Image (cartoon, rainbow, N blue to C red):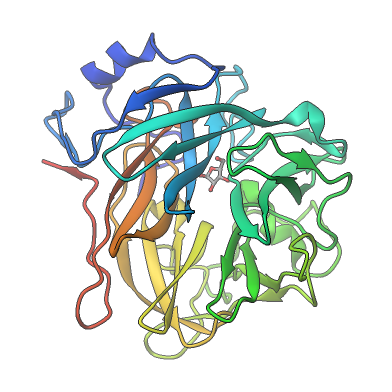
Length: 367
Ligand code: FUB
């Protein structure tokens, strides 16, 4: 297990690229080259290359809108905040949306889509966003700390997938924690999945009251804290009904325990449906894996199935999954350009559903 502060060796490529990356940028284009793999200084090979290198990007939530791919990432910046287990060093202040016609094509950075200063209730740390489309409106969902330093989830709207987005004056009522992922089922009902432990504060919501005194780590023999799901209202701006904790089970049918660090939920959830089955994918955090669990209902329970992606370079791992023209892709991030855990870059590679319904395990770096 790698510690929160661990680093892999700097790559020559990363050092060369570092000078080129800036914290701000206007709209511009750059070539995406999926699945080319120069070696890093450790002798390892990256499976894919960064989609953009003019800014640092992370937590990519990809969608296909009108046949085109849009990626809604965090925009990582250097702020000098010290690294800690609260994730204070992830002090992002705006969002840029990336777009491309298809994987491997030209990637456009569409400039600032939403700025922290334009969210009336927000204080700091614009973390992993997601997006949805319904009836001519694009919705951007974002976690950010409110004036009391409590993570809430907000919504902003636009008539364009790339923004600019206008934030609602208040967060979504009843929302908390981080990493929203909005999935619209084949019957048209949308659900928001969310949550993240440790810096994501989910452990502080064991009851309906926020409790900042709860320790980040649970005793190993307790049932692990589950991610949350809520039905979205018809206008996509509120929860329609209660927030529910999702049950994650082992193959023995018993709930995953907090000590199951290589399987239990940490953050970065995503939902996709394939052949009528619901695939819940997420990061295991301190064990740095992307894993998956499957179920027969969008709200669970879900049964743990296996590892989707081995650890990337950097502490965090976060992904999304889309289908375009019959092919499935996973967008993810690592720290190839900076070798700093808070300055990440998004990437994409193909995802394989095996004939038996399992997902092929991806090795993001190979020796
Ligand atoms: O980008 C900040 C946080 O790091 C995200 O919300 C987590 O999923 C992790 O990637």
